[in-house]
Structures are given as structure tokens and as C-alpha cells.
Image 1 (spheres, rainbow, N blue to C red):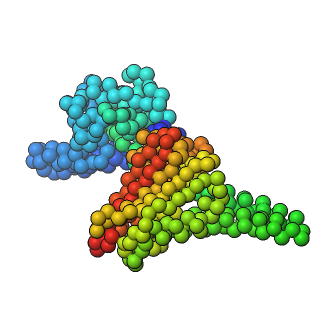
Image 2 (cartoon, rainbow, N blue to C red; image 1 turned 90 degrees about the vertical axis):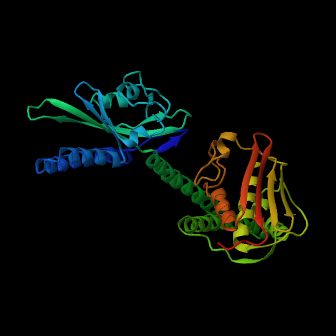
Image 3 (cartoon, helix red, strand yellow; image 1 turned 180 degrees about the horizontal axis):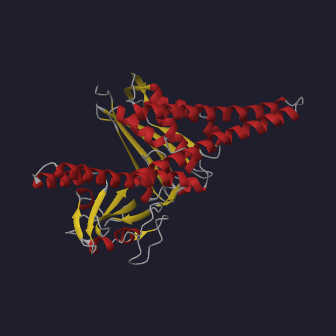
Length: 404
């Protein structure tokens, strides 16, 4: 499955998984109705039975609409009434449901009026293999599935139709994250391996007395090995941090000295010899985790280097804010980030379109992990950016973390 700008194209396996949920919800509701009917036959408390039926429908997670034989709405459960797509519409009737504009699986192409999946579900002509999108009033997209089932009496006449509408946006997002992760990890691990393989073959085929040439080849292999190791370690740390709280081991640190050391030892800085990297600021003391802070500065430096063009500039600034807080800023004069993307930068596996189009290295875990590390230190992180001007990431932390 792939998803771009809210659009989705799903494989058969993913669709089968998604299709199961609304159908299961309907079957659950209908089974509950049947059980209650049995209870009704054994009891004369008809009002109690009716209350039981209403409670069952209200507690089902899928949205349920019950129509009579004339397609008039008899019942709408809480899930439908409170869903943001119809919230504020007042009473939810057949007309309201039919008027909802639906979009095909690409999230862009609208269905013709009266021919959307919801309208077809209301008319019991819906195919559960189809995935569609609707937008709430502010434009937020939601992925939906719908299914319907007719209830017939003993003579076979249709007495009612039950329609189930299930919001599967989170499931679609989960599949999107899975597919993006697989694609990105494959690329990130394959690229340095390809480079190492190529230069090792050159070193093997062109062994001469020119030790400088051999040393050059081996240096490239070494840099790519470092990159491969960094990617793997990044995933391990990210996986651990998303399943349990980060352990912070505090020691006395000079942020300026740490940043200077990271810049001087960075293979990426050496590789981008056409970029000026500066560390600005006097000694800035705090208590923090050396390993985690190294990862934060390294990740922000890597992002900045990937954003700047030839002759660009990256500046790491450190400062004390009074007697209780410190600030670290990493600024670049690179390509910048679109405003629409800024709010998602701390979302796991999110990558901007520019990053994908220009094959910028990364798996979309750097900034989410930075935020988790800063949060674990009791600090804050913010990003300001302007297209064509550059990006600044600002971190503020207490000089000494308050134990939590």
C-alpha cells in the first residue's frame, strides 16, 4: 500500500484485512440482536429488551445506521452521531448521509453525486472490497469502509437494512507506515553496502604500489560502514524508546565542547567539505546524558548538512538562559521546509516530499527520537523554517533534570 497526500492504493491482502472490520462489527451487532430476541421470547419485559438492543448498538465501535423498507433512518448509533464528518450537521438522516461527498481510493477523485459508497450502502448495493475517503469540515481526510445487510421477515420481505460504516484511517496509516519503513530501510541499508562493495572491488582489482589510492578506497568503505552502523543503532534505540521510557544517565556536560567534538569527528562534515560548519558560544554547563545528547546533536547536524547546497552554512549555537536552563540551536541556510510539513516533522517515519524526491538519506526517525530524548531531559524542541531561506531547530533544557 502507498499513501501520498491522503491517497491510498492497497494490495489485496491489506484490503482483506481492512474489509474484515466493518463486516465483523455488523455481524456482532446482528448476533447481539438475535441473542436479545431469544431473551425477549423468554421474558415479557419488552421495554427491558428494547433498552438492551439500544445499549448494544450504542457500544459497537462501528457506525451503525438502521433504515426501514423505505430507506428512512430508524436508528443512528453514537459512533455515527459523534463522528467529526457529520458532527454539527444536526439530525443525521438519509439525506445527510447521502450528501456526504466521497472520494475514490486515491483520495482525490470524487464519486459522481448519488453514486458514492455511502449512497450505495444505503441502497444495499455496496461491495466491501472498496475503500473510500471523506473529509470533515476542516479538510481532515478519513478512510472508510461500509457494508450493509438486509433483515427479512418470515415471508422474505425486507423489514430493515443495517448499514455499518467503519473509520479505518488508523489502519490505513499503520499500513502506510509499515510500507514506508520497509522501503526506506531497504534503501538506507542497500546504499552504503553497494558503495562498499564497489570500492572493495576496485581495491582488489587495482592493487598497486600507490598506497594513497588504496587508502582513499578504504576510507570510503570505512565511512559507509559507519553510516550502516549508525542506521542500525538508530533503529535499535528508536525501537527501545517507543516501547519503554528512555533511561537518562546524567553527568556534567559542556554542550559547546560536545558540539565541537561531534563536528570535528563527523564523517558527514568531512564528506561535505563544501559546507561551512561553525560552533558558536562559550562553555555551557549542564547535567545530561552524554550518549543521548550526542545523538541529538548528530541527528540535527546530519539533517542540516543534507539540506544545504554547495557553499552553504550550518551554525550550532549554545547559550545559558539564566541560571536554570540552556539552549542549543542548529541553523542552516538550506532549502527550508514547507509550512504544511512542519507540524508532522516529529511524526515517526514522516519524510517530506523533497526528501523522497531528492533521495535524501534518512528513515524519518531522527526528529521523533530527538524529541523523545529532549522530553526525557525535561526540555522542549521547536522548529522554524522558511522555503529557500533555511531551518532552525531550537532545544531548551533545564541545567539539571527534574526526576520524574
